[in-house]
Image 1 (cartoon, helix red, strand yellow):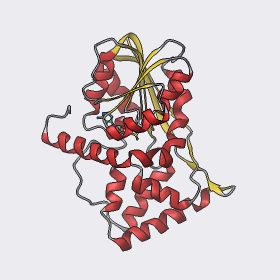
Image 2 (cartoon, helix red, strand yellow; image 1 turned 135 degrees about the vertical axis):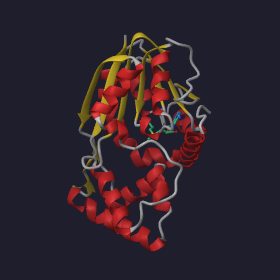
Image 3 (cartoon, protein in one colour; image 1 turned 180 degrees about the vertical axis):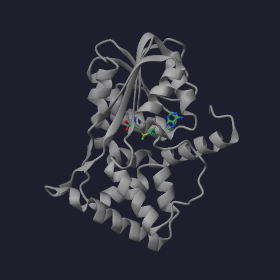
Image 4 (cartoon, helix red, strand yellow; image 1 turned 90 degrees about the vertical axis):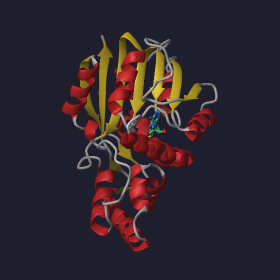
Length: 275
Ligand SMILES: C[S@@+](CC[C@H](N)C(=O)[O-])C[C@H]1O[C@@H](n2cnc3c(N)ncnc32)[C@H](O)[C@@H]1O
């Protein structure tokens, strides 16, 4: 457990408990979506045969699996024991271990590449975690992270947040954490990575599409497949929650395609070198 000040400790523990709860449902809720970054993220860090790659906050292991498919030697790490169980169940031939992104259990310069797919937005101390990734990379090693684009662009989040504000309340007491969309801002991501010592920072958007089978699948994913938004939803009154569910259903209706949905959920990919 890496967090030391009381606020970040509370947020870290809140996220940890949330992921332990969400672990078995997360892959069904978001897996097809978050795994869409794999090709671009692995290209950005130059993952290929023989690359020693660390997948930090690996969840069910989507990126680790894709990297292994390229012939990389992969370690997946996650602080949720339930997620590690899930990753091992899905990819029994790969190495997954429990550990904290804010205090990586590896020696300096152990990896050629490190990635964090939709992990940094869940961390109590993201700057510490980025510095840890820097430490475990060899000189010349490559780092890549992804986050959601801002909610005006990541439609699923945007309409959920609007539904909560309109029909419920976003004023829910949760342990205070860093802003969810901090790293959606390319300038902020670049500044942070460069302040840690990374060079050659590149930031670009990836056009991900969320394809839930039904409108209720969107609501269920938000209610059960994550942590912060899920906690806000669970804190609503039953009437407000029902109204939010209906509003999300109306919000996704324009994105209906071929019996399902295609909801724009762009991601931001940042990559850099430890020189
Ligand atoms: C949104 S999921 C992303 C999972 C996966 N990378 C993917 O591509 O779908 C966030 C993951 O970060 C993990 N996580 C959050 N905080 C962490 C920390 N401090 N150290 C390690 N893992 C952490 C959670 O347990 C969860 O599996």
